[in-house]
Figure 1 (cartoon, rainbow over the protein chains, first blue to last red):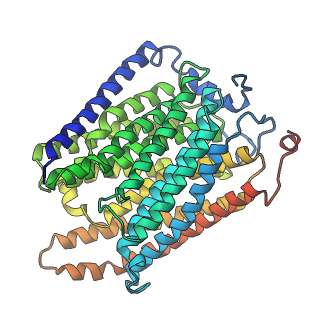
Figure 2 (figure 1 turned 45 degrees about the vertical axis):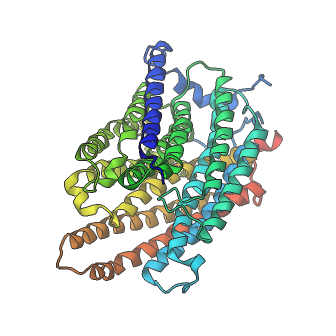
Figure 3 (figure 1 turned 90 degrees about the vertical axis):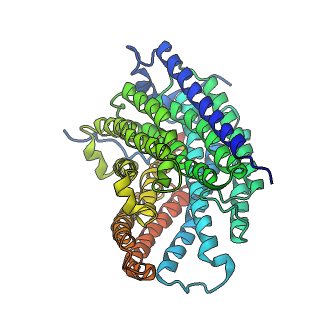
Length: 58
Length: 469
């Protein structure tokens, strides 16, 4: 029987790497997109009125 | 300051145009509640088997070894994750200001999910079981879960991609995190684990088990709480920036904690220490979340008298704080030496999955069902009763198992006590656990009946404005 221990652990490490890289990438983008600036509190007010929105998208 | 004189969150608001069809959300939520009830029967049965081991004789399908995985998988994937997915289908289009990308794809996902759960019932009762904690489902069903998750994720991401507002509310961040993290956690726990052997295999399995709670049910549960606490209380979140700090600290910290399940086991000391350090660091995201919710409720606590979704939500927040304080503490080597593998652990796990995340989901269901079906809840007193039954039953269950677990651990640490004596000594604990479980189950029955009665229109309590729509 072949032992796939090392390939499977490297696969798990690869997934870890993808997650960390993705998290870093999107975290840095949030800085650019204003989540930490003066408009950072806007979304909490939008969400209170979301059910009354009349959509014209489709 | 008194709470606002709001109408009950379980009545239909005066102006509620039918913008969303919510078909996929209805399919997921109603089927998840059916599984909550059915698997609740299994839960009470296995709790009874602790007290009366001869119950149901020697029929293999009804043995503890087959019913227990069915209970775990049924509650995790049949009830909680399905309810969470249904609520996500409700929330995401509203937060994005657009319709769901594809209701048909959502319904197809719900049908496939039901096929998976029914397949799990048959295969687990028949003893077809991979033998891994939380990953008992046989391989064909694992593959179907992956397919269903891709369908779910594609639908949600496509909806978010077409959103009206550039900045996303924190709930959307948690939902996107859940979709990506679940893919990673599920693939590792159900596929990569099969190619390893020995200690590495056990280590991967426990990373999956811990992250099933920490990176699947935690982020989606918090997504619901961040949405429904402000909505049910009609009050803005205390701080969106703080919520983002909580999200990103969870994203960077949670994944490293799984090895704390193997402390004092045959894995490297450095790996155990890393798991302990990151477990303690979890207190950062947890406290940002809990502080934000409590600060949001400032001046709003009187609403708790009549607002059933808020009762469930804020009780869930307290249970979330308790369970997330327990987790880091029992990852410490000295505490772990006592509580590891004892009844403390199911007490802890039930407080997380039932007390925190199921309470969030139940609150969400009570909030959305009247809005989706455009009629008032069938019975508000029954909803209050369901809360108190689950609350009292849950407290009895959790506290008994913590105390029993400590007692059990101390006995196990005394080599002069024969193991069988420690089993006999715990019978009073398991008796209280059974009767607490009966109370929880009665709460589930009232919850399920109330929701189903509302869905089929057993009690038409439309407000005038809603009836005119």
